Length: 280
Image 1: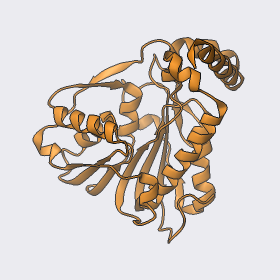
Image 2 (image 1 turned 90 degrees about the vertical axis):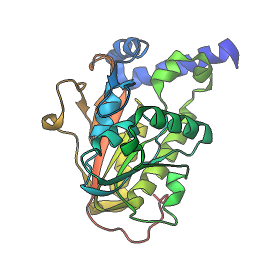
Image 3 (image 1 turned 120 degrees about the horizontal axis):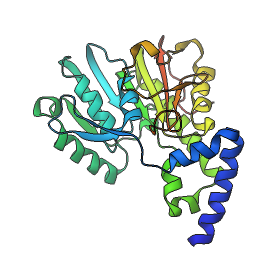
Image 4 (image 1 turned 60 degrees about the horizontal axis):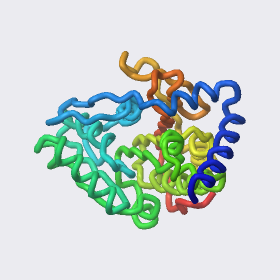
């Protein structure tokens, strides 16, 4: 599509987010174009892994049981899986399934896990390649805790890439939100009663954040209990966040460059029976 396509895409992109964020958007856009606020995460790893501070918080926000199965549903490139695995060190009864549908991204995931995990933790991690939305059609309530860091608009990357900017459109946001809903609904069906699920994106679009999370409550009713991240459970090094209707949002203009990152945490209060994962 070339430079002209990128220019048209950027014009539409900026117009959309100026409407969403108003007077805040120029400062937010400037923060998005700077390098993200990354840290070298090293807790219980053989070597550090560099990742956004907001991503560390997202993975740390998932409550882990003392024993059972944990699923990282869209795990590549692997940073959040490393955080989850490191938290399993003192809980020998836990195992982690690091799942990635894309074969190329799954190859990268395997490399990251192999290069950073000590052998004792690596032995408790299984890499898989199933479609997390489709899996719920044949399996239910199989994991005690699930992290779903869903594919999203990733506006920070779009701004940095003319090629991605040329492909950006309102339709892409709608298509991503539909896929996110399919993944989230399926993940909730895969979650055991009493278990916790964290849904996260690196998107600014509310359609991909609270818009998707809200559909979960509409479909599954009282089985969905929202449990937002609290100030008391954060650490001094964690980024500042803003509260939304169903979760929290970390934005780089107010969080020292961290994010964007949306984090929604829910608990499954009871079993659901046999419902379609994609029905609205």
